[in-house]
Length: 226
Image (cartoon, rainbow, N blue to C red; front, top):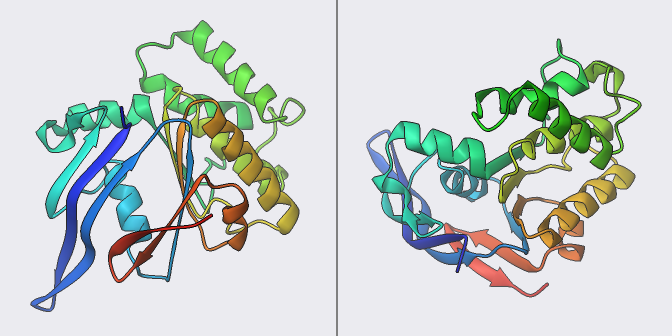
């Protein structure tokens, strides 16, 4: 069973009374246990596609299925609940709360999850801190960490509610070569742990980690050889 299925997906905007087609006839299935790399020129619709998969945006025409559920049939609160429990987001700019410690940043998403009481939040946070090798940094503020460390915190935060889908938008864009490699290796390991990992990236190195490479060109999603 596919984790994510897109059927005849189109996305268009109206700007100055002119229709702009961003995505055209997208048909694709994303599976658990695989890492997908999406490349394409700036403005090709990569982030738009990621936002639609993450249920933040929606197709103008077409259907997005997650776990065989038509997302358009869900209310806003149902979509928010699905995002909270099933989808983890990772961004280029980290978006950590500068006033919270690393430990507190990672814990944030669990406060709105009824499955986590105080004890479970603490235990899950410790698990993620250890997983990301941040045990000596947990009481630090984001400004006291390197870029690579901050991105590891962002990944830990994305994993807080144990999502099966990880969406990463240029997760290595602000990192040096060594930290790029570290982050890609972490994301690759997550896919091996039966998660569906989808990465938008301009880095050529994504090809070394992806199970399936995709390219968005003029709104059309094409499969490339890895």
